[in-house]
Amino acid sequence: MSRFVVKTKYHLPVYRQRIYEAASVEEACRLAVDDEGWEDEEMDSDTWGETFVTGISENAEGAYQGVALMIPAAFQGTLQRKADLFEALVVLIREPARPMGLSRHKFER
Image (cartoon, rainbow, N blue to C red):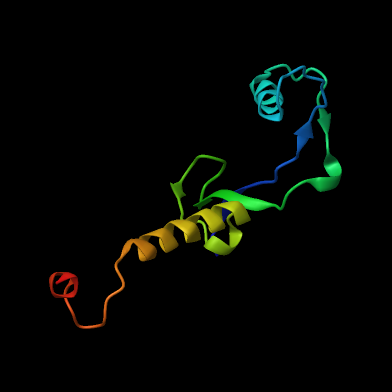
């Protein structure tokens, strides 16, 4: 039987609420996003994300040892799975729709 070192994560939302003086909603949002001060941060433990696998290796004694293995899609984070599916769909959409059996050259004539 093999031994696996598995690194898992979950995202814990951290938030802050501050007042920004701005001429527009967009400017207020930009000020908030660019603000690097987080000394008044709060953790939102009621809405943490799912647990997902970020790394796995076989027959290792600790993290970052042994050979890294592919993580099965079902154990990757939902956001990563959606991004991978979106990328595959974009590739399919970029291919021109053409009847089966015709080359691209014949189809475009």
